[in-house]
Image (cartoon, rainbow over all chains, first blue to last red; front, side, top):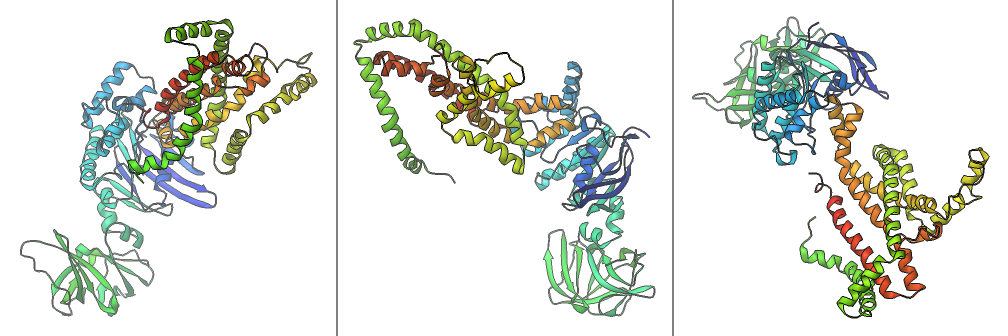
Length: 353
Length: 278
């Protein structure tokens, strides 16, 4: 296998009786931007720690660039790392911090100077060489951490919630920059986050973790639009999950309304009908008997600027969220208005409850 | 909660009064009364020169400094790994180590010194063990000499060093060490390039506080030392109690006080975490 490939083979980690990571297998291609996404306690950080070498798995193998690294200590793995709290050494200045991975390898002075200058330029931190961490803003500290992770040109860089401490604007900015740098250096990035938007923006592929297992893995659009489980559906953004029964080729939704479901993952008879709020169209007026249509009444309309989010009560007290773009000449529905909701069958899925 | 300045002074008032009444006033009175006996300033200076350059006193100053340095270094060498163990320990192990360090700290120095005398004497436990194992042919002199003083003082002063270092080590974010390891540092490099520099201010503070306390020691060298182990505090006591040469005692007191305050001034800079970490 080529440099920069990463693989986990049936990796399991237990702490006492608790299994934190259960039989996780992943193959990541060189140059891929791969994200581990999940709520806290889902095992994503433990998985990253096993890749880094801080934690040794109880079962399974960790392969880096085709070599078995399961039991190799962190310093033998040659990875770049960005830590959640940045872990910038307070007693070293910015240049010394960035140089750290090279100094511990006893690289020649001239090479260190050249590579540090390159890395500093890449994260746009020229002129900050002599500063100390406490003299830097959060965004600048983040850049130092990033420069330090890439200074030795590692084939694989691990990033543990690197943008968690930044405010929203800066976070977006850094997402773009990290993505840009990783592409330019052709490095494999394994990125841990609990922020689904960040995962969708940056990743080539996302693995959504839940209770130590990978719930689903795939490109952002696929996992967002075709979730295999209600967990994935609900974790990645807003989702309508309506109680439904199978009824021949269709399903019976709230009030027994027949709805075509897309190619769902459901074999059982009962489940949840999944559809994203932005895939739901809303129109004024009551039931008209058209297929895939649910009559309802607007409960609440939230004006969010570029979109308007409606909470519509349909039969059996169920609520459907519907996002509409606040486009040119868009008319708003008021609470109490009778409306019709509809969506394309292929935008919905029937999932196990 | 920030406290307003006048309130802060009010809260400090009892302690300040106590310090002024029981320390500053008596020492000031003692120094003034003793030294004014000597006459004019030039006479005082002549006397000071005579006293401080006299054989007994300069020998004692050298002895005091030497014992202070040796004890401080020993305490550092023993205390650093001990503090490290304490800073990494969890649960009952932590409590056990801490108790071992703090319990003696709360015991009177005299009691501890006598305990050491029992252990170190010619027929003491240590000599019996050494003889029993055949490591020595005759009892080793561990008491009433420099060795005894150094053993006793090292033991008494160890908690000050350990607790000072512990505070500094506890403040080091363990994630920094993990990060260093992740970036390719060997355990020795993690220690040398991260842990040690980050605990250096604690080392400086611990060394200063130990040395300050060591040069003022009285009980331990008096009980465990020999005739040549006269430290400055013992000499001051001798001048006051036996020869009743108060001016001489006062001059030595000033020397000790000035050295102590100067070192303390340095210490207070390093004891403030965050100040010393550049």
